[in-house]
Length: 81
Image (cartoon, rainbow, N blue to C red):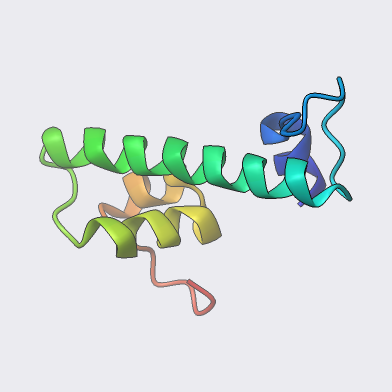
């Protein structure tokens, strides 16, 4: 999503710009974003807000946003999630 790239895109190859069409930048950015989501899930689990599987929660957060994981106390019931 353009807004996600604008907020989370990173320069993975060190050329000075985060380019969504550059596979190195895109893959690096995806990994960094997934780690950020996983850290958010870990924090929610530590607070006792969620208890589901870490991977399931992280993938749900990628699809539906971490804010919706918080709002629904776990994966939301959105069909695509």
